[in-house]
Structure formats: C-alpha cells, structure tokens
Amino acid sequence: LGHQLYHYKEVASTQDIAHQLAKQGKPHGTVVIADEQVKGKGRMSRPWHSPKGKGIWMSILLRPDLVPVQAPQLTLLAATVLAEVFIQKSELKPQIKWPNDILINHKKVSGILTEMQAEHDQIQYVVLGIGINVNQAADDIQGDLRHKASSLRIESEEEWSIAETIQCILHQFEKTYDQFMSQGFKKVKNVWEKYGYKIGEQVTIKTMKREWQAELIGIEPDGALKARDQKGNEEKLYSAEIMWGE
Ligand code: BTN
Image (cartoon, rainbow, N blue to C red; front, side, top):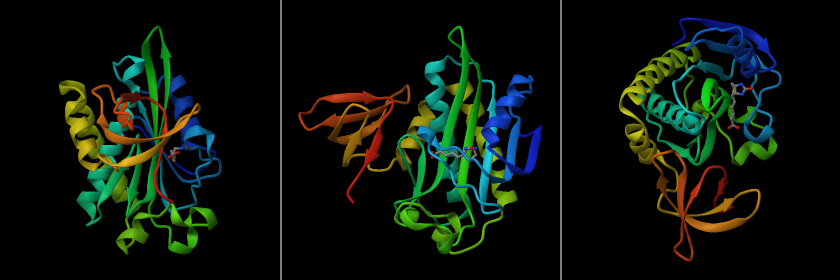
C-alpha cells in the first residue's frame, strides 16, 4: 500500500482525486493524502471539516477481487485498523460505532467513507476515505459539534505526528487486508465486535422509513448489523443510524 502516494497541500476532496486516478488505471494501493480539504465529504452527503494540518485526510484506492455486497466488509475492516492503531500509539480506548465511526470517550474522532465502482456484479475499484481529527484543540471544534466530536490530541492530551500515524495506518491496513483476503471476514468481525460501541445495549435505530428501539447484538458474517427489537425479533441492517441518549 502507498507504493504510489500522492500528497497535496490543498484539494477539494481526496476522494475525487482517487476516483480520477482509478479511472486512469492506477494500481491497487494507491494513496492520496492532503493537508487540507476545502470540500471534504462525509457519509450521507454531509460535509467533512478538514482543516489544514490538523488531521489525516486520506483516500486509498483498492482493487479487491470481491463482489459488491462485500464492500461493507472493507469499511468495517478499515474501522478495526484505526482502532488498533490508536491503541498501539496511546492509552486511548477507541470504540467503533456501526458501521464505522471511531469514538473516543463517546465522541467521534474519525469517519470512513467507502465509495465503490462496480460492473457486472464485480467490484472494479473501491475508494476508501479515512478522515481523522488528529491535532485539533478544543477551541478548534465548533458550536454544535463540541459535544459530539473530538480529536486524538484532545482525548490523549498530547500532539500526534501525522506522518507517523499515516505510516502505522498503512502498515496495519496492509496486514489486515491481506489476512482478510486469505482467511475471510471472521477475524475482522471478531476484532470489530471487540471494539463495537453499544453492543448488548439498547439504542435508537433510525432509517429512512422509521425509528425504533432495539438492542445491538453484533455484526453478521456479511457485515450487516444485527439488532433485536422490543418484541424479540432479530433484524439485519445494511444502512441505518444508531443513536443513544441525549
Ligand atoms: C463520515 O464519517 O461521514 C466519513 C468521513 C470521511 C472523511 C474522509 S477525509 C478523506 C476522504 N476525503 C473526503 O472528502 N472524505 C474522506
């Protein structure tokens, strides 16, 4: 991974650049990094605040031999990679909120955006976007976000080296990815569940159609979230938002 690494000072979004590189035929493992994104993208068309030099704004181009329904597994894999790197580098206790937000002390420090190009039921490529709030100070986090978002620095009370953290992530990612490709999803699932947020607890689940109370049970072998509603019915979710107390 990162054998071809593109580093920019400022871009609209590293996702867009990675898509362009993919279309030019760049190989699996190409990495795009920027110091600043002026139009960072989050999930569900939300903006992603990516201030200069404060975080890791990175997109990884993958060309996995997988079918499209397996793409969510890559997202969960990436979340486990970040959790493990944060643990290697600090005393922090990261948790993963399904599908892929990394929380520390209940606040989001990192998000993952997976975008896929598929044809004839085969993945052409995946652009895996990783955003990590690294060195923002408490004052850098504005208004509404204050009680929901944080940074590695705020939570660990020390500055982090961005370059070194990127290196660790790429190294851990490569290791975990190779393991996943040769041995399947089970190990990723186990690691994910070890860090899973609110597993075994009651939460509110929200989809486009409804909102209800359920207990989170874990993830399915295909990466779906398993939950049990108050009548005891188990359900598999592929897309939903998890919420809890206010
Ligand atoms: C989310 O939690 O909503 C996902 C956030 C993903 C942000 C990263 S930063 C690098 C890459 N480029 C983008 O524009 N978005 C992703």
